[in-house]
Image 1 (cartoon, rainbow, N blue to C red):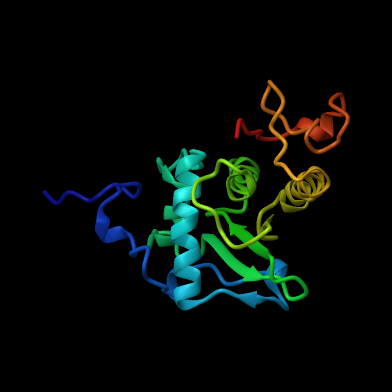
Image 2: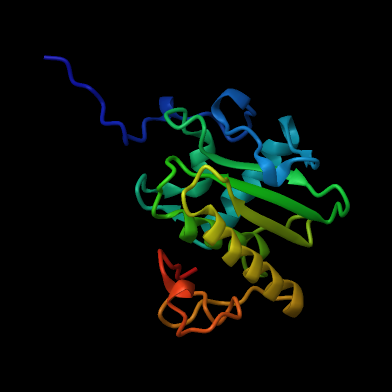
Length: 195
């Protein structure tokens, strides 16, 4: 009898190293990164190592796979998923991060993208980085990317206005943080985040 490993196993053979930059196991840079300086090689690997520490400090975990979300970039079983980064063309103090989930209907995309924004931009998020702002968007392949990205734009605007990352409401929604009417059902549909 031959045992077949479960597809969600965490064998080290299934993962690239944090020091490696392997484009074949990363998503292609999407439209949010078009026209900007996409990080590659050592620059990508260095920022992604910092990302691992930020995500660990703020517990940004993919609950489906049971690991720090930064590890998704290294998971060879999901070569088209994870984060790609680019320095904004008009403002080198801003980094753009585009998240490509594993499926077009991933129910965690809202939560993970929002938690990522908070982790990169919060004062208590682990080691500091050189950017004044990390902007986050979900790749358009996700069926709810427009709705999720609209929330991220609101969250980013709130951060730019106050200089601090707004925390979620007691129920975990982002309505108040994003400046939306908490009674508006469209503002609270879908996954929310405690991050």
